Length: 115
Length: 113
Image 1: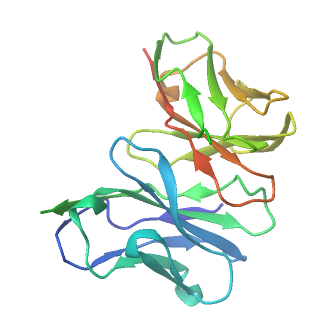
Image 2 (image 1 turned 30 degrees about the vertical axis):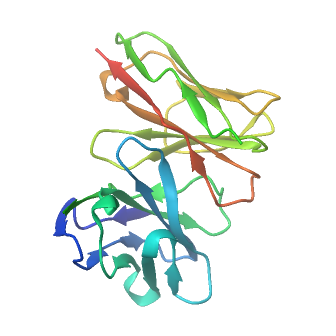
């Protein structure tokens, strides 16, 4: 069965620090990959997605993620975090050709950015 | 444009009871997915509805059922509630069944005692 692993449950950074959140998935087929973010008190929303092509994808608010097929990884990065990036981040994987709503999510990483 | 809305916000039920949760899709969206998010975990796919029919199901027992109405709003019904059903239930809508971009609602927090 598909599974998604997010290595860090809680990350604490100071403003301007660089961020990298790990995401690994276990599935050998072709996948679509997503990062979602949930800011305090808000809905879960899409941060960025990878379908095909350039493995380095850019999302909103300066976030980017790199798909490394050989490592089954899709790590999220941001060069310089801000206090407003405090949120919970979820990685999700969808097998290409399957029901588009049937995403498998990781358990999330809580990011706290100290001002 | 109205986003995805869900009702109620919070709900407390007793083990063995039945519950109905409601979701209104974002305007123009015809596909709805339901997810269960237990505390400290990511959302788990329950099922999806497209054009009023179930169109895909996750690893949930039949006591989890749903409906989609002609206006694309949706219900999630859970019978014979168990303590482990306590979770946040999320609804997500998409503009079409082939679209990969989901718009999530705020969720309904269900507590089973």
